Image (cartoon, rainbow, N blue to C red; front, top):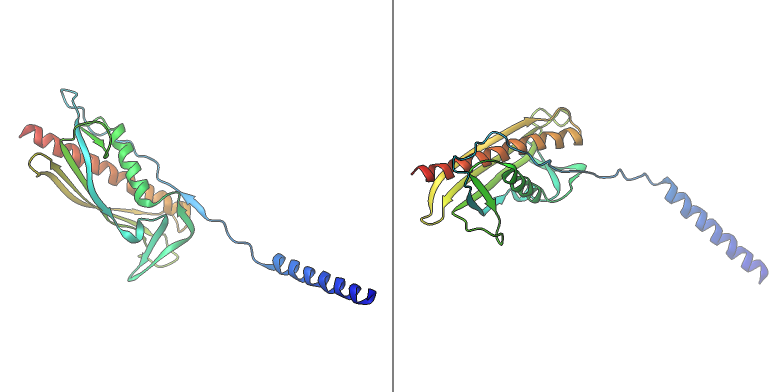
Length: 212
């Protein structure tokens, strides 16, 4: 019996040692790096003479489904994939909306953006559709990609649903190198330019209504 128990202990010890060896030999998983957009601030719009700001409510819109989540979409020709070991801190669509709200809050232009449930009687509606939001490897898989952000904006006067301003535009921003941080930085620059353009387009729609 004693010999049997000793053999069992020896077998258990060898099994534990083998398991420990397996765990030690497994390659370490590279941690995922998280990125976000800094909120852009526009200093290019002018204050209206009266100082009164028209209330604009976010009236729908969409975000490219494959890019709307927290993974960073990349493309090369007809192929699409997500950037390895890199994600947004939140869904890209959420970060984009937060940047837009922040930019309107910092803007000195005639349009004041609100979202559903906020106080204020909206006079205009703002629809923003982001149809493309990706890092495009147009020069090969090892070269620095070019960020593509395509946006369509519509500003509508709510009382008669008249379109006061409508614009489609594309932002292109080359990353400094083919690394996650550089790609995220290029996205940030592209988003900043897109957000400022949206604010200017909205202000132009509000101003056109006031003049008409």
